[in-house]
Image 1: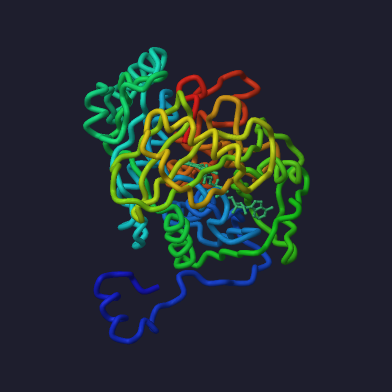
Image 2: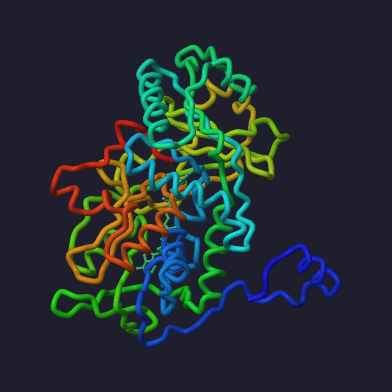
Length: 414
Ligand SMILES: Cc1cc2nc3c(=O)[nH]c(=O)nc-3n(C[C@H](O)[C@H](O)[C@H](O)COP(=O)(O)OP(=O)(O)OC[C@H]3O[C@@H](n4cnc5c(N)ncnc54)[C@H](O)[C@@H]3O)c2cc1C
């Protein structure tokens, strides 16, 4: 596949852009693959990419029931950070954050990584203590964060009201190299690289069954016919429970809708990402000028991939105290995705009771930031049966009561 470059753009400009190749092929499924990945979201595609790049496994199909990147990967608010409390979380999220730094070069695809900095506001004494503890843990883990004063928060975010009546800003956990990236581009960049390695990305093809013999996977049933495989990776976020049921086991997960919205575009007013977890809202400004706003999950289990009015009201009402200027903004559009949430708010990257079947799920409200690290570790687990990055995130931790508890530490995990 031809490399993208400034030279290629100049060349195409002289010939009406007629020479660009398709970014990825649209093949029909073969009868058999060494590895089948279900789900062409960021995690599925990154897994396929690292299977090829790091382990030389390229007889791979990624099967997607809709269009690639059309699940949560194309619906999130793109926050990237690695300031988690537990060592195993910090390791995988920091691996991911560091891979984001060079992703555009690695994939030869501009994913618009913008390390503009992320602040998590401390608006109660409890949060101050919690974030100071996280900053100390991060120092030991080699993750660069610091606890900053309210005045420093105000310098970084001039539009913020730090003296808010109910929840004044008492400080913040600041990660200067956190930020955002273009979510679609992450999926497209991986898809193009996988296709270039000879892998098949098969869209509009739903997996409807998982075939096994003697406790070992032999293939999948799909809307485009049966496909045999040696190993199967289930990477379907909010649909993980369904796929697990097809394979005959259960997952300790709940599926719920998570929503986000954007305002009309306005002049540049905020060049960092701000998360206000006490009032439960977070905000950044897109390159187009829209304020990108996210809130919490629905309080009941559901599979609704759309927004709802009460969420706009709840989320915006929560943020207005801290950002009074947004009360004057018109909201343009809202949407939702189905997220898969575990009890300890940490992911599942694991072997399963069916030999040859692996599961990558449970990223809940915060898996976009993890995509490259997750793909790196999960590919290693699928190829070799063990990865130091995923070792603590096995399904066995729920039976053994050995949780990687990020729920108390973060409360919210975007
Ligand atoms: C509103 C919102 C805001 C968010 N904000 C952030 C954020 O700021 N930062 C952050 O880090 N994370 C955020 N997240 C979470 C993040 O988006 C997800 O954790 C991540 O995108 C999950 O990626 P994935 O590849 O696992 O899943 P997905 O991108 O959902 O991909 C799974 C794919 O599997 C496919 N699939 C399902 N069933 C089948 C089947 N039977 N056969 C074939 N294909 C199937 C689906 O169609 C889908 O395309 C947010 C999520 C939402 C919804």
